[in-house]
Length: 151
Image (tube, rainbow, N blue to C red; front, side, top):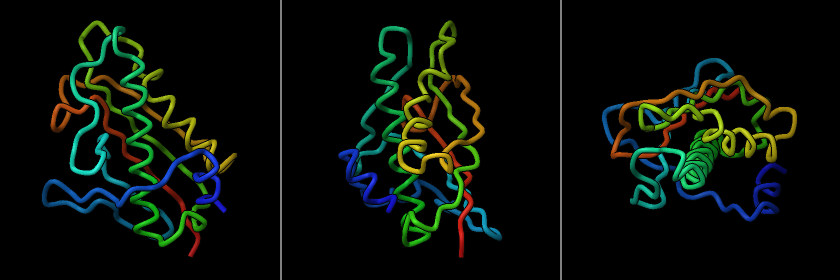
């Protein structure tokens, strides 16, 4: 059902990115799935890099959407199907921004929008969106998630 929704949005989930260090890409505890921070990887390439400012907001928003797609890829890898998702609980978004940039929430909005488009009301979540002085591999954005699922 949810994967059909992704298809209708023109989105094909990639293979879930592998960790760049000694950590788990996802951890299950009870009926919660904690997804480690996802950067805008497309294959082995960081698709969106550099500092975010008012001048490159649209690229940063595309970066956030790629992060959200990678979150969904991790969820599918861990749960076998997106249909097991019962709620997107929280997204935490980090934006590699110049000091004077104050629109971090607008940068992360496309990730939140995608969760709602895919899961409907179950995709509404709590969220933070903060600026960071740098992110791994000079990524524009990094987003982590907490997802509730059914057995």
